[in-house]
Image (cartoon, rainbow, N blue to C red; front, side, top):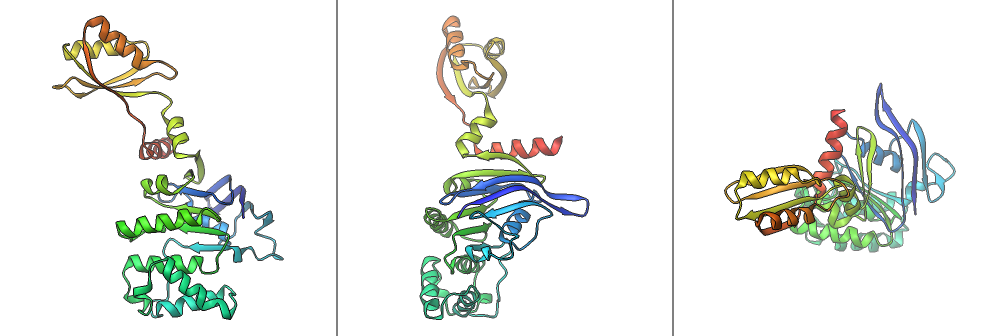
Length: 313
């Protein structure tokens, strides 16, 4: 099922936690939802699930409004909240049976679904323990199991790999990728490499507003807008090389990386051939280029630039 958000707003007193945002998510798409603490991610996810009502705007799921009391769209959504509330005194199996019954699964199918979730989420060895006896990582797996037990068309996962060890994180990422082939998934996380490894598209929210929307590659290119080049030049005096680089018309900024080794980082101007100009400069001065490489902006840089720029205005 697809999700369409139009002009969504949520206020807490005078503060707009979510400020007139619009976006959509298609079936079979995994959307990574990023933002600093307090940006509005969790509030947005709670409104999509129907846990919290919006003040303005519409949430359309599968062509129907979440505010239409005649439909029951919540049954199509699986939700793993940020804090993963669980009944700590209940054994894992009993809790999953309880969740399956709450979701209206036919009695004859309940145990099959429970066994499937135990297998998929890797909790077979812990299934007879009380939830309060589990590690944080296994509690997170139980939370994932309850979110998926009714086989929903939409999964809303708020920090799903919190507390997991590296091996578990890899397994959960793989599971989410597999689920994303046929379900609509919105995934919130603070782990930026996880977004690149798992998500088809990234949406960055800051101060209640969307500040970026696209693939990781498109966001890097959009944020960069110019070449950043690492270069090592030999057979020349470092200060003379530095000044020559600064004088190139295609160069905006030059930094020393290693003065002893004549390594520089050069930021080019948009739509210029900085690498060609550096090469021609070295030929003219009979200097030798022993290294030259394009330094790609990573997702962490993109995230930091987009969120700190907004906050500083």
